[in-house]
Image (tube, rainbow, N blue to C red; front, top):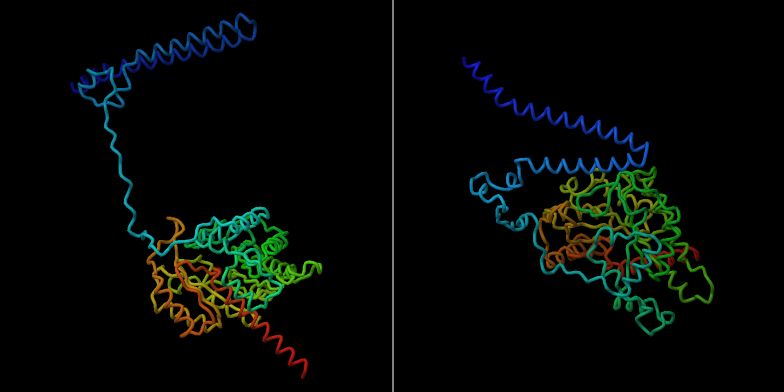
Length: 456
């Protein structure tokens, strides 16, 4: 009995739906036949083509009439299912839009302190350097890594353009004092492209497994840019190129050698002032670790550069989290130590970021291990998070603490020089005057020793 009632009610419920579905199928078949016939007729005569247009218009009208006969309206979707909405079907229901407040800043993102203020990049010298970089298609780590010091480093005054004193009539000491007073514009040129094969958690440089190929004419472009700027100290750096057979060591070597060759003073006698200026160009190379392959390190270390820099970045405990998995704390120490073995006359330099969660004892341990590998110069700077995708800042170190690290590095651990400050970076110009003096002093010592050896 229950089964008979179920079938009875089922037929009563589904019958209208089945009839409606059948009617829709029949209508679709009729439309298909009609459209086919009209298409055939359209091909036979202009009159048939006009008839097709009339039928299409009639079809559109029929579809509109079907939609008007439908029971479902917009109110069924946007309104409530109560009787009040049914009674007011001519009006859309009033809905109050509630604006949501912006989500609170995550606790892990610390607000920047007042002492982290950089010089704006607006000076004429900045515009000049930027224009040269753009015209030659070069990349700079200052821009790619979003360095906060770009306005300070690129905007330094040029001695030749800031004074009426002729640079050809002053001594080297007077010239150094003059440059220290007015400052020297410095840009760190990034060679081998602007895309790195590694993905360190602190770095803002673009990454890719297969970056574009190297520019074979880049050595000439870099040398042309540097000499046009009239600098006497230049920093070259590069991305990691693990995709290349020699990881870019040969290209790096060619850039340094071409720069040294072009700045060697070969030129007309009428250009004596520029030649004298070019002779003083000092090259610092901030290099990758070349995966610890020491023969590749040797290629760059013996290319004729004056300062070999490679950044250890952080303490050993934080290295796996901060740097790419192909980098290593001990690997970086080995690279820096090997440089001194193959070129004792070169100065070695490294940089450490603070504010990543390191302890004071870990920093002291790192400094001691750097000195054990005969590293000459160390810099300390505040880590700044480039974006939300990168490592957060654990601590903002005060300027007073940075000064304490500088004194400890130079007086207790014996580094020849230490640049330390919140905005100091590995290629920051704060150490260039000191490094120039050290390089020139080493050169004078070598020349004196060679003179003594020649007499003997």
